[in-house]
Length: 344
Ligand SMILES: Cc1cc2nc3c(=O)[nH]c(=O)nc-3n(C[C@H](O)[C@H](O)[C@H](O)COP(=O)(O)OP(=O)(O)OC[C@H]3O[C@@H](n4cnc5c(N)ncnc54)[C@H](O)[C@@H]3O)c2cc1C
Image 1 (cartoon, rainbow, N blue to C red):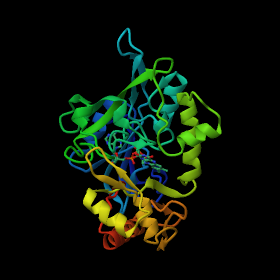
Image 2 (image 1 turned 135 degrees about the vertical axis):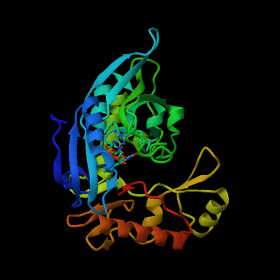
Image 3 (image 1 turned 90 degrees about the vertical axis):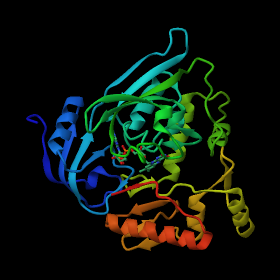
């Protein structure tokens, strides 16, 4: 512990994208495995929170335990099989997610471009199986290297082990708080291979057409995804938020039909298991919440799915706003909205 600095009564306000005032009883930064193990040993029986970029967390009160932030930045790549066009890329948990996306694309590797500009760290990316523009983390993930918080054994978990779902994995459910994610390994395609980019979602295809791009590269897709995201989502540097606050709810065909009968313009998307996904943002907007204030917290005026801290909101106020929306949507549509953001 001699080399590890422990900060007491440490403000996390600038370390989470909601930027609400919150104090951690203790805070430590760790740069490697040895420091991580020392920090966990130091914590003993006190609660531990592993903090990444703080872009999917809402603190509703001060944190009485120890917050450990991983800073490890390692990156390596090797050919998957000598004759193939696939590369194994491993990045440490502390690396910024978008830096990884940018680096792989600049090295001529495709697969992560649709996930451009998602805030946060590599280490948090498997927690909710991050997804955007028709792609999820699990599509290119090979393994997740994890440390057991109790006995300090290291394991490699496969995609099957992680039980990924829509914004979901074992790390959020059955094995919550069991592991610290140390690094993530991806299987990426060399761009000069038969690899073809995914253009099928959102406005990507129309943006390509507008730009007259006929054979888009990973870099083209990244540029377009960044452009669309910058135009649609509030920048957390300017206005506190954690992206989509709720997941898009999934309902049976029967419920979908009842809802469509009453709300003919409700957007619905079929899922692989014969259910239907509803657009949570549409429900919230239709219920009249867009731009609404609750104390100092506010539903974003352009994106009803994004709850914001325009400056003075506390975590409690944002959470109260989320609960009011949840209740209202249940009453109006009979649909339960599940929170995507981790509440503490
Ligand atoms: C503007 C904006 C847009 C967003 N858009 C998207 C989007 O398009 N798609 C999407 O999926 N998400 C999106 N998000 C949510 C967020 O970016 C992701 O969930 C991201 O993966 C969170 O990373 P983080 O490092 O900030 O995690 P944090 O918020 O720091 O932590 C999230 C959870 O992961 C745990 N954790 C973090 N690191 C580790 C680790 N190494 N080991 C074990 N547990 C760990 C934490 O304890 C916590 O429970 C968006 C957020 C914002 C602010």
